[in-house]
Structure formats: structure tokens, C-alpha cells
Length: 151
Image: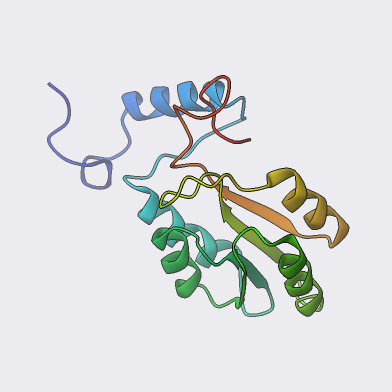
């Protein structure tokens, strides 16, 4: 039963595509790309979308997979005090000359269960023309009214 190895070795099968469609539907999104782990996803994302002319502004208590992904990209790095919106805004202002500003946060922080103030983060992102990345690995399936996480 099943495949003899991981997708990377065996290739994309119809079962992978079906699971991606099911997950996209569950999250009410257009599409999904599955990775073997969150570490793999975060390692691949930031490097692919951010360059040296960009800035990433990361919560100080983000999961190690986000921190490692940030380290792999060439964007300028800023770290704001955990869930401190005043500090986040000061970092957004400091990075105002960046081509792209990306705020990175966990939805639910795995070590202490804090829930990111996403409404406030998104308001600041809109005010400062920034993008928002939310890692939902510790929220999907159990957090929120429908289990869809913090979003």
C-alpha cells in the first residue's frame, strides 16, 4: 500500500494532487503546494520570493523553521519584539526603502501558545504597503471555529 518513498523520489502522483485540492478546499484557497515538512516549506519560500532589495520583518519568537528560512534568503532582516505592534511599526518604517516588505509570523506560537494579533499585523501591513506571511503549522486542524487555524 502507498508509495515506496517520498514525493521527491517517486514524483507527483494523482494522490498528491487530490490531497492538495482537498486541503485548498478546506482552507478556502485557490491552490495548495504540499511540502514534506514546514521546515522544507519555509526554507524554500523566502529565498524564492525575496532578494537583497527586499526586507523581512520577523517576530522575535517565530518558530525555528521560519528563522532558518529567513537566514537562507538575501533580504535585509529585521526582528520585532514578540507581538509588539509598536516595535513592528518602527521596523516597517526603518525598512521603508525596501522594494518588498514582508512581515513573517506564526499564527500560534508553538512554545507558549500565544496567538498572533493578525488583525493588527494586517492593519500595519496595509498602512505600510507590506505583505504578511503566516505560518499556520501549529494552528491548522485544531484552532479556530472550523479548525482552519488563525486566519
